[in-house]
Image 1: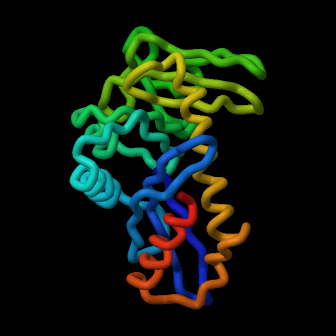
Image 2: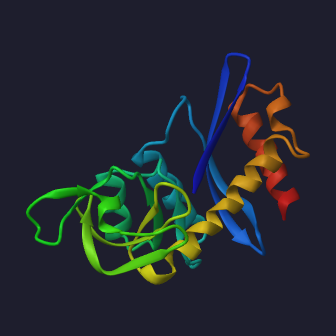
Amino acid sequence: MDRTNWMFGIFKINILFLASNYKGMAIPILWTLLPKKGCSNTAERIELLQKFQKIFPEQAIQRLLMDREFKGKRWLKFLVHRNWPFCIRVPCNTLVPNKHQNRLLPVTRIFLLTTGETMAIRQPIKVWGQMVYLAASKKGNDPMVIICNTESWRAIEDYLQRLQIETMFQAMKGRGFNLEETHLKDRDKISKLLCALALAFC
């Protein structure tokens, strides 16, 4: 799940996508054209997932992959309570309890990693009010920290598959499909255009 946007003049096109990774590429499955600029909210994300469930009632999601935009107590509670498997990258300043449970620390303090190292914590830790598992990998100055609700030892590997949706956005916007050059402003027409693009990806 991810969101992308572009501008046509003063007209803001802002789309929340649910895509499926298949053989090294992301294929758009469902989307919502947001009537606003900026991040999606919990209600919009829930609506998109519920739409998926309604259309594909017997299709299981192996793992929802989301970046740092997809944060918040209500959103995480929904995922945990509905048992949606997920990997979410969290901001480095996300607070978690220390091992003594008597103070909160930035999540990066949990991991003492050198460059190139990866670590998974097998005991759940409370983040945004929910018990989740943590994993981290360090390539630059700050580690990439992932929260998940299952199989923390493979969370980093799974999360990196999220980059496929970034490649999909690049293809849509500037590598062949050139959506940024569209003159469409009507959201229904843009959605129909996205349907045609989704078929092209297949």
